[in-house]
Structure formats: structure tokens, C-alpha cells
Length: 163
Length: 139
Image (cartoon, rainbow over all chains, first blue to last red; front, side, top):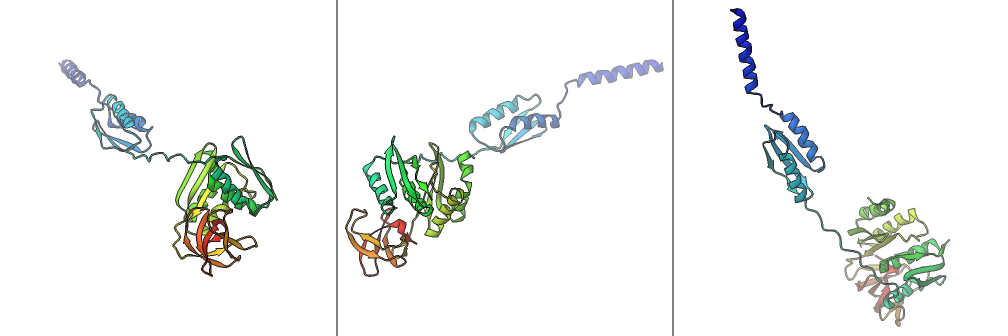
């Protein structure tokens, strides 16, 4: 009799066990998976509570955020993704630096003006590049570069010997 | 940070510390372009001193510094900073133009207008107006 009761109790316990067989993934496990997905976006955050992934922080672009949301939804156990994240405002790239051409007569005149007080320095255009030769002191070289750099003629070869 | 920005980081820091406004640092075709406006000559010098500390020959082709003293008010006092000689005040902003006056090294002139980066319209103590090469004017 006792054995029968025990057997039935066991059977019942087992059946109860089998009914709730659907394994519930813990928030902790979901959090680990979710964090891994969002790791590629350092400014974004995700917190999983009761199977819902709460997305926060900032993404570099809408495309990246959409991709993260899609991946999060694919995690087994995640019921939904609550999107509270923003897209970072990316500054537009700076406009290219406008350079002048070494052979331009106006540029040539300005270079001449800049070198007027330094007779030991010569200038010529070699392969389209302004090339300075001769000799100059450190102080003179500084003044020359100050004036020539302001012209923004691209690559300048400061080939003079600086004493 | 690119290698050029690393190489010249002290120049950029100097510009920031000196209060250079509208500071732009951009790499293009292998040259680091550093540009901005300085409120006075000392600030501009600070940036160039930083370059001098890296390269005392000032012959680097991979950095281009264009920091101009800008925003000066008309009437500002400017000191003549020529090597030894007098500074020629010219009728037009060009070394080919006629000389209308002279200002001795160390003396002062008044700013009329910063008509361009390299030539400024000034007025001498005698009341002579003309253009002077800005590199020789300290603000």
C-alpha cells in the first residue's frame, strides 16, 4: 500500500515536471547574449528584464540600431525589444582644404613678396611644386614658412640649408 | 589619431592653449593643415614656437600652419617688427607698389583695416596711410 502511494506520488511529480517542460531562459542568460550583440556599439546599452530587452544609449547610425534590434529579437527567450536608443549626430566631414597652384602668377608674386628680404633664398617651381633652395637662418626659415604656408600651395619643398 | 596628428600633437595643443579660434586640423594629401585665428601676435608665435621645438629648421613639408592674427579693431596699435630696417608703407598691397612712407623698427602705427592676410592698411604717426606687409606688424 505504501509503495503504491509512493509510486503514484512519484508519477504525479514526474508528470508535473513534464507539463512545465518548456525551459524558461533566465534574464541573466538573455542579458549575456544581448550584451554581446550590443558590444559592437560602445555607446549603446541593453538591459533585459523579464525577457524584454530595453535598448538605450546611442548608435552611430539608424542602420546599426536596426541591426542590433533584429539580432536581439532573434535571441531565444527575448519576448520583445523596447527601443529607447538614439542615433548620434555625426558632424559632417570638414570641407577639403582649398589649395592654390604654385605656377599661378598671383601666388608667384606673393612668394616673391615673402622672400624679398631674404636674398640668400631662391625659389622655383619643380614638377608643379614650389621649391625653395639656398640658405637661411632658423629665424628666417620660420618667417618664410609663415608666409608660404599661408598661401596653401600644397606640397612645398623647403630645401634650403638652415644654419 | 593619424601619424601626422601624433607627430604634431604639440603644435595643435599649443594652438588650443593659446586660444586660437576656429581651429581646424585636417590631413590632406600627406600634409597636416592647421589653421585658425589668433587674437594677437603672441598667440600666433606660441603655435610656431611649438613647431620650432619639433623642427628648428622649419622646413617640414608635411605640416602647413596658417594661423592669422584676425579680428583686430580699427585703431589698434601695431609695433613694427622688421629685422633692422624701416618698414615701407606702400600705396598698394604689393612690393612693386610705390613707397608712400616709412616706419622705424620698434615704432608704432595704427591699424586702419586688415585688408588681407599678408597686407594690412595702416596709418603712420605722421598720418600717412598705406599698406604694410603684416608679417612685420606685431599686435
